[in-house]
Amino acid sequence: MPSRRRSTSSSSVSIGRRGRIHAAQLALQALEQGSTTIQVQAANGPITLKTQDVAQISGDILGQIYARDFKMIDQSDMIISLVPELPNGKPALSSGVERELHHAFEAGKEVYVV
Image (cartoon, rainbow, N blue to C red; front, side, top):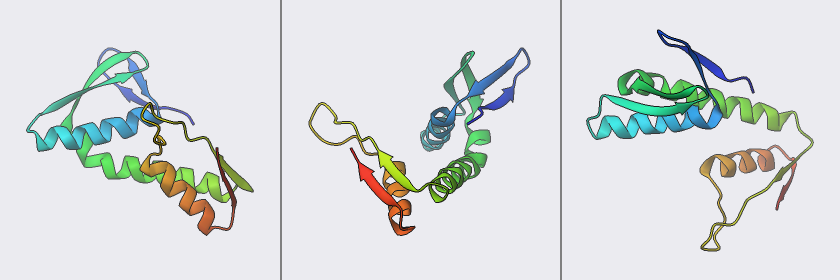
């Protein structure tokens, strides 16, 4: 997936999918704690964002990611998901992966978890 570009006064930075999710979650947590800015890692190095700006669009960010992932599932014949094991022996399964696996199952796709 192409990365979203954000212009700054000095250059353009690129934030990947995980970065967008992380920035949205970080901004919401920072707002709860009263912080006005967050710092996230972008392709060109760390950048500072206003928590209010990110929080305002966090729903859109997450919605676009989920919609794109579900569309990819809908276009697939089967889903194979690698779920690594954490040091404590529990599966490292995120809520997003669970949601995607459930969507695939409900759509009648073959679903395999490794």
